[in-house]
Image (tube, rainbow, N blue to C red; front, top):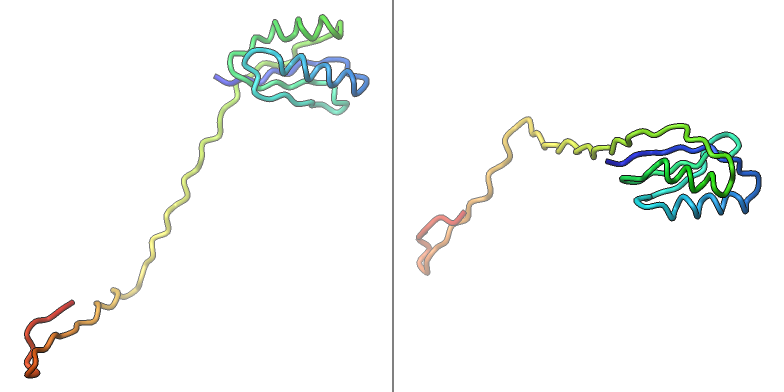
Length: 113
C-alpha cells in the first residue's frame, strides 16, 4: 500500500532543503521526495510502508520543529485501455480475384483463389 506523508518543516535556506531531502530519502521504503507548499516548507514523501513517526522524529532531530500534516493512501491510476477501433465498411469487402490455371492446350484445369 503506497502512502503519501506531508510534513511541515521550517526550511529557510537551500542547505536546509537539501538536508531535509537527504533525511527523507534515507528513510526505509521511500520512493519519491518533493517540496510542496507556497513557501516550499512542506516535505512530501511517497513510498510503501514508510513509518511517518520515525520520519517525523528524524526531521525533528535536525530541525527542532516538524509537524506531520497528513498521511494518506495513494491510489494508483489504472491504465485505461484504448478502444480498439473496428473498421466498418458500409458494403462487404470485395472478394479476392479468381485466377484460372490452364494446361498446354488452353483448357482450364482448376480454379485457384
